Length: 466
Image (cartoon, rainbow, N blue to C red):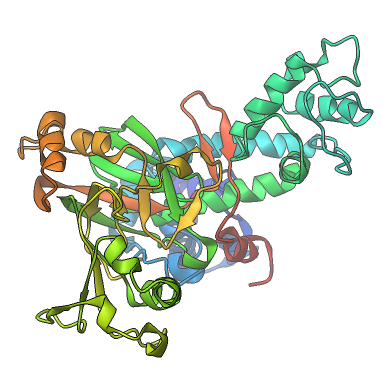
């Protein structure tokens, strides 16, 4: 304010807050406290009201309208501090619009989602896309009356080449190309067959896609302002991992994440070292629930799969023979023995694990079950992240690192069969994140199944009654 009332900066702030919808926020959350009779209010009162409006909006835009941990205890992301005094000085110096740009997450994905939000709101306003009856399974070259509805649905999405057929009821090659592309962008099996999952994705209303975009914009606000000059980002919902250097994605590869019952957590840390030819200490829960039933059927299971068994979980516990134990008398809830799988081809962690010690005991690692990477849905682990072609990734991770490890040296270490720990001279930030919407460099969006149902509560906060 100034001696005449609300200043130019004050008017600019109200204008910016009125456009909060472009960031998926709600203008009334901030403007409702601004008095209608502001021209007759005390200047000090107006200053406090405008400052309060700015504080709430700035905190929400920079750090999120919700608390990161609101959805689950397996989300450990610290709420960002908001330097009100510093940002007020910046507003005075540069103006609200400039500050708005600086408060937004400085990641290309956020800007792409903002553009996508506007486009999908437009689609929703025009009625979205027509629904397709889902009472059949459509396969390529099938002829069915529902194919016409499929063509209309795909055309509304921008697949304009699907209407060239002289037989609109035929599921032809041009339509197949569009369906295959759509399936790939929605985390579906890329087979051209339209069953329940494909129909569910095709029939999701445009309004729900708008809400999904807003929820994912919120998640970007949770992440640290600076992800690092060089970092690893795991998108659990998309089953993908990216290595980013100076803002450019230099590597993308498939990952396997935790099952719905064993959800991979969300947090940020730093990869500090790699263990080649690692051992695997079986967690008590897995030992009691999964290994013990196998031992009761076959007491030789541990020996056959290269495990050592120790008398207790103490660090100095001696090894013992698994054949001396009556496994029928062992409690699955209080499994007393420590089992450690030795390095080798069948080791559950494969040839390498990427370590960032954390309270969840979760890390990135190889797997002997490499055929699982061919699946479209890859929520299959106990929480750790399994990496496709991890030795190749290890070589990339050590590139430009002073440890001096290259592909040939890595191969020699693995061939030795010995547990070998190599530290990164410069630890690499790693972000275990969760995005059900992703926009590629070509601007084409991908939607993924909310495998952990993490969108639900955030959606209720934004669009419901929480």
